Length: 427
Image 1 (tube, rainbow, N blue to C red):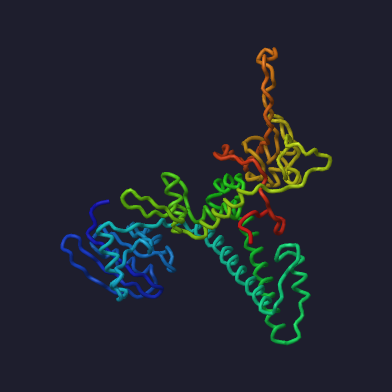
Image 2: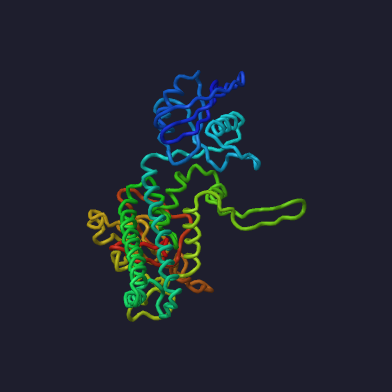
C-alpha cells in the first residue's frame, strides 16, 4: 500500500463516532464527531484525501464498519483493545483522546490487528459462544442449589455423582417446613432445569449445523482425535478462524494463550503458568481435551470376548452399533451407497487409527505381515507378531479426507443428547 495521506483513528459507538484525522506530512490533527450508526462514518472517510488508512477498536459494535469499508475500497482495520498501551498515571479517558491515541499508534506502527471474520463464520462463533454462556450460567445455578442446601445442613452423600438421576430424585424429595425455603429451592431447581434444556437445544443446533460451517473439513479431522468431538472442534475453529493464517504451531498456541509465562534476567530463567491471553473459550476447550486424552475411556466387553487385548479397543462394540459391520481392507462395504444416500456418513467416527476410502465409516482390522518371506519360505527367526490395530475407513460426501497427522488408539467417551453424540465440553 502507498504511503497514506490521511491516518484516521475512530472511537466507534452505537449512535455516534468520534474521528481524529492525522496528516503524516504536516502533523496536523483534526477531530470530528459523527452522528449516526457506525457505517455512517464511511461517507466521512470517502471525503478525505486518499489513500486513507483508518482503525477502530474491536467491540460490541461488531465488524459492520470494516465490511462496509471493503465494499467501498477503503482500508479500515480493527485493532485488538489489549494491544493499546496506556500509561499508569493516565486518569483521563474521553472519546477524543481515545481516537487520537489510535491515530498516533497507527502511524507509528505500534498496533496489532485482528482478523475480520466473514458473516457465516461470525454466526457459528456466536452459536458456540452461546453454548459456552449457557454452560457458565448452569454451573452458577447448580452452585446456588448446593450452597443453599449446605446452609440448611443438607448434603448429597449418595454413591452416584451429583446431578445424575439419583441426585435429582433426592433433590425432588426435599421438603421444607417454611414457605420461603420452599420457594427458594423451587426457583433454583427450575433455573437449573431450564438451563439444561437450553444447553440441549444449543448442542443439537451445533451437532446439526457443523457440516454447513466453513470449517467442516477441519472439524471432521479434529473429531478423529481422542478427547475432541463436535463441540470442542467447532469451538476451536470458530475462535481461531482460518488455521492456515498461523505460520507455525507456536503462533497458534500463543493466540490461545497456553504458552508459559517467563521471567528471565541474566543467567536466571524462570517460567510460570500459562499466559491466558487470547480466547478463554478456546483455551478451556483445549485444556479439557487434554484432560480427556489422559484418561482412557472404559467400554463394555462384548459377550463371549476374552480379556486379551489383541482384539478391538475398548468400547469398539459401542461404535459397531452405530456403524456398518467390519470387513477386510479392500473389500467393498455392504450398504455403503445406502448409507451415503441417507447422509449417515460420519468422518469423525470415534475409533482407533483413521484412513480414508470406501463408503460410510466402518471398523477394519489391520493385520501384520506373516512370518514368511516373499517366496513363502519361513524365516530363520520369526519375530512375534505385533498387536493388531484397528482402522476406521470413512468418507464425507464426495470428498476424501487424508489420514490425520496424529492418530488415536482409544474410543472417546461420549454422552447422548437427543440422539446426538457429544463428548466435550461436559459439566
